[in-house]
Image 1: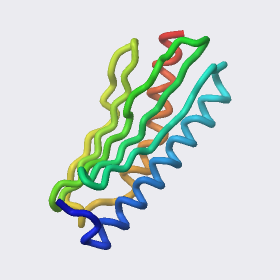
Image 2: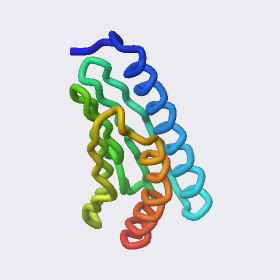
Image 3: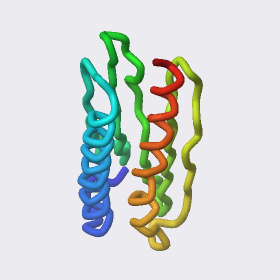
Image 4: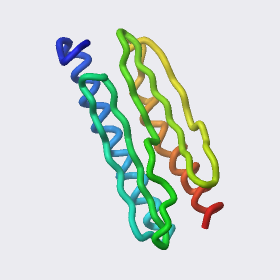
Length: 130
């Protein structure tokens, strides 16, 4: 178990949690402009013991909950990073992205590219359900 015994890993976890928070704000601001919502939120959870970070997204329209799930999950195991991105609702489930590589080879642009893919997928789910 690693609890910040490696500054590089600690910096990576910190940067990734900030980036996921930015993605949540991006999604909320774009979706709020297009749909009449009753509730929406995003939360970034960091679990140092499990070396895991995830972005939870919650959205309701007309008091009907459409989303309340983890849409991005990042996990560090030994020297590897695992990124999964799923969107699921009453409409179904979409696997937006799965990625695994050595931490040393990890490019932050992988996480940056998730925003637009997630937005498009969530919009499709909302359009189908409403």
